[in-house]
Image 1 (cartoon, rainbow, N blue to C red):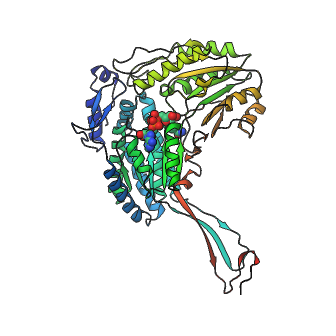
Image 2 (spheres, rainbow, N blue to C red):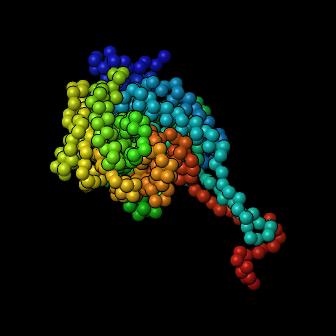
Image 3 (tube, rainbow, N blue to C red):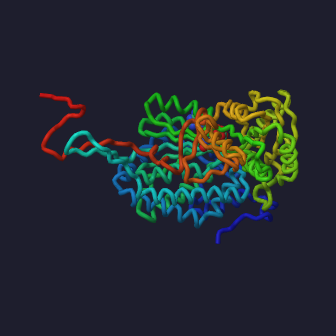
Length: 512
Ligand code: NAD
């Protein structure tokens, strides 16, 4: 039986001890060094969990070299056999779900259910990737030349550099790694400097999986450090693909550097997700969808709902219902059963939240819920989720504030709603609450939402792994997870085979 942290443990506040016990059970040993430059903290109470050594430019050089060597071996292993490594990883994740979920809660501040949900998402992508390992298919294409055959193949790409954000500390790695491994690639992961322990734990599990199935353990590597370490990975010409998840600011730094060496990027950047609430909407359902999407993970999801665009005829009714729902939200330690709003990741996040509230009210917005610092566990960053009724969509509304801050805007007709909806620079996720089929279909059509995800009668957050995940515009255009997202991790060759004794040329060209 794995040990799950309970409410009683929270009051004991030995979070550091719990983290150490979990790391040991997950096979990561004791990774801490007393004089390490990297300080691991828990957002629950701000306590130090331990210190780690930061990797240097020389470490990046060596780590990518090891990954490159492992890739040369791994690419020759048949894809269904590669799938066995991912299947074993999925098994280990099932076995250690409670522990890894608890570590996510300790390090990222997610409530217990969301920490476990993140590990479940890892298990789900492993299942998908194992099936995919027998389905990495190309095409056979009609050729104009007699006695010829033309086809496309998908082949392993190389070393994939994965840069990830703090708010999905383990799921984003697994989306990339499960697919990359079955595609025959090696992975070098630069996790967020705010969530290093979960990265060490994942790497320990993957290493065990590799040892169990006899795969080269170096196909998966971790680099610990801040943006400079990520930068060294970004600039390394041995890394053909950089899959980077984080802020648009980071994407704007990374993309031109990879482009300068003509490498590929897969970018999953910031969102500013909206829900349109139409006059026909089922308001009970809309309120539940809005509250989960706006407040879940304390508003720290890339897909968190940040703007509600509501028809003027139901504006007051919806606002009153949201106000009532927000008044009952349990805020506090994410380890307490019953808590729905845990801490923000750090003090800078609280500052950004309160500054955005001040700016929006200065712009004419009316604060109708929360917006201030809340009581929580001493040392942690707890805020009361805010709702601000805005007379118009000002610059602060168009910016992504990574906190539970929901703006409400009124609209007169669907054209105006869509205009407000698409007016922001980001294009990740979106939704409409309506029982009108014309509105629903228009929202998902070419003249509707300009986002990568467009939902009807559910909020914008909480995607499942079967669909391709990602967004347009400043969200970066990348797609991860299900559907055909695997293609980003492979290279395509077009092959033409002549099985005749003639040499006809394409386009009827005669030569000699
Ligand atoms: P962040 O941009 O501060 O950091 C993300 C990662 O990028 C970290 O590992 C960081 O060390 C690294 N990094 C930063 N600058 C870099 C550089 N110049 N070169 C190389 N690496 C660099 O983001 P965060 O605060 O950890 O996460 C929150 C942000 O991530 C939000 O904007 C959120 O919307 C976004 N996000 C997007 C998705 C998505 O799928 N679209 C998913 C999760 C988070």
